[in-house]
Structure formats: structure tokens, C-alpha cells
Amino acid sequence: MDYQKVIEEVYQEVVEENPRGKVANYIPELARVNADQFGIALVDLKGQVYGVGDYLTPFSIQSISKVHTLTMVFHVFKSKLWSRVNVEPSGNPFNSIAQLEYEKGIPRNPFINAGALVISDALCGKFESPTRQIQDFINEISGNTCVSVNHEVKKSEQNHAERNTALAYFLKAYKNFDNDIAEVLDVYFSHCAMEMSCVDLARSFSFLANDGYSIFAEREIVSESHARRINALMLTCGFYDESGEFAFRVGLPGKSGVGGGVAAVMPHKFSIAVWSPELNEKGNSVKAVKALELLTDKLEFSLF
Ligand SMILES: NC(=O)CC[C@H](N)C(=O)O
Image (cartoon, rainbow, N blue to C red; front, side, top):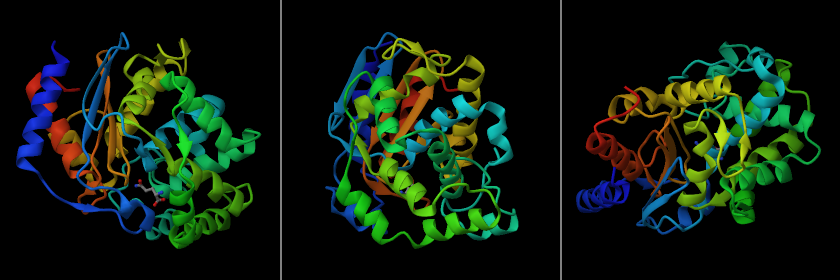
């Protein structure tokens, strides 16, 4: 399979169609990026990289980091984790407060903000310096010292933290939050504000295409059964209230972030990251979703 040729064709077609959205502006610092950037990196299971466009430019990975933090915590707490966070699609916006209230403080899944805050809380309870360790973990599985926290983005999130702070207090009120709220929010904003390029991001997702084994870290990151479960969660919950649409159009487990990135895997074949900052109203990158749809059409395979 000539992946390079396929992603170049995809890139060209998306550039020609030029579907547009809006750069996230509820985190003001994110609105400062050049909206025309667009990159694709695909990594096969031998570690071969195929890239096109701005695939070497670091960008804000935002909620994609929730897959990394879930992986770290799942490995430690195993199935006990599911008493604190559910595994159902939310069908609601990623920062919904109402849903958390009527479901009595158990977030629908680990990828909506409330669920990711529970994961950050669990990290704070188990890891000495969680932010440092998340960074080390992502560096290890991408085989590169590539991740940095963008402090401007982090500060920008902290200055507009009303909803996430409200979610944390709700979780605390329902006794689903053990640590200091400010400390956990700091870890959460730090991992959302991490930056890396498409190529490093695709490499960091490689273990999920490879039954839990990372060829970059040269070790098993999670068991095969945990890798399957993380992929199932990405397929059903990775795109918030657009997860069904993404499964329908693309058919790969994946995760989006409001920085405009999407990381996805085709189990036993490859991992891929696509980035372009303009989002649709559900918070998913318009060009990245289009590119992945064209990709699975051209490859004539998806998970299905
Ligand atoms: N969907 C996202 O990427 C949201 C992450 C963002 N940091 C927030 O908390 O709102």
C-alpha cells in the first residue's frame, strides 16, 4: 500500500474543497494560530512515517491528551476505574454541566471534560509530579522528546476556567474527587496545553494500533485487552456528540481536540494524526474529519 501517495491525494482534495469552520476562541490563545495550517502524518507498524503539509509543526493537542492520561490511569487502576467514570457516549457537548448533575457525579466517559477531570484527579492521587510524568510518558511512546506545555495556552485556559472549575466542584460534591481542586485543574490544563506535531502524535498512538505494544518505547504499554477497550472508547466517545457521525463517515477509533487535531488508529495497520485548526460547531476539525473520511474511502477499509 502506497500510503504516501494516498495521503498526498487526500491532502490535495481537501485543499481544493477547502471546507471551512471556526477556530476555537473560548480559549483566546488558541484563536491566534494561523487557521490555514493543515498536516497529515501516518505511521505504519514498522515505524515508517508518511507525511504531507504541516505535519512537522507542533500544535495544541488539547483533548487528544485525554487518551494519554486515560492510558496511564487505566494501567494503574484497571477495571476499578469504571466505578468512577462510565463508558457510554454522552450525546452532549464536551463541557456539559447538566449531564453531570443528573447522573450524580459519575461522568459519562473519560473523554468529556468531567471524565477527564476524574482521570486527572486519579493521576494526582498516584503520581508524584503528574504533569512531568504525563510529559515523560508521551515522550517515551512517541520515541522523541517532543512534548512541551505551552504556558500561554495554559494561562489562557486558566483565565477562562469557569466551566471546568464548576465541573470539578460538582464532582467533589458527589464525592468523586479526592484531591485539591486547584492542583487537579493545573494538571488538566497542563496536559490540554501540551503541544506536539502530527508525526509525534501519530507515533504516540501507535501502541493502540499494535495491541498495546509500542515499537518506539520498545515495551508493552497496556495489555492487548486494555488496548481494545481504549479503542472502543475512542470509537464511541472520541468525538463527543459527533462520535456516531465520525464512526459513520470514517469508521476508525480516534480522538479530537479543540486545537484542531485528530488522532486515529487502524488496528494492526497504522496510526494517523491530522491537524487543521478550524472546527465545526461540535468542536471537531472540519478538514481533519474530511481528510480521514477520504482516507478510509480511498483505502477501502476501516474498522468495519
Ligand atoms: N474538546 C477539547 O479539546 C476541550 C479541551 C479544553 N482544554 C477544555 O477544557 O475545554
